Length: 132
Image 1 (tube, rainbow, N blue to C red):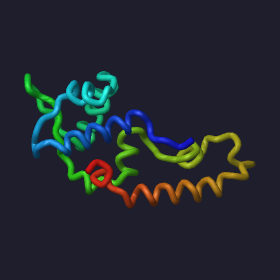
Image 2: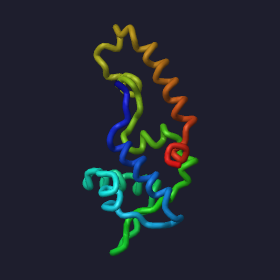
Image 3: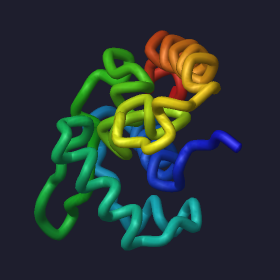
C-alpha cells in the first residue's frame, strides 16, 4: 500500500496549524504535539528538519518556537516529500539501480510509468494547497 510517512504527515499537520495562526505568530513544538497527540521527539526532529530546509524559521528564547518562512504555494509536494524523506519512488530501482533483479525485471517499465504519473500529479500540487 502506498502511503505517506508519519514524518511527512506530522510536518503537514504542523504547517497547517502554523498557517492558521496570525501571520508571524510563533508556535511551540509542545503546542502542536499536545493539540494533535503527536510524539514530541519525532515532531521536534521534523520541525528542525523543516527549519534547516528553510520551510519554517526557528525562534529562540523562552517564547520561542517556529513560524512559516517559505511561501508554501511555491513548494510542490515532490520537493516537500524529498526534503522530508528523500527520493520518492514506488520501487528502489526508480532512484537506485543497485537492484540485483534489474536485468531480468519484467515490471520495471510499467512501475516506472506509474511512478512518473504519480510524480507529475504531486509536482502539480503545492504544499500550500494541502495546508490551507
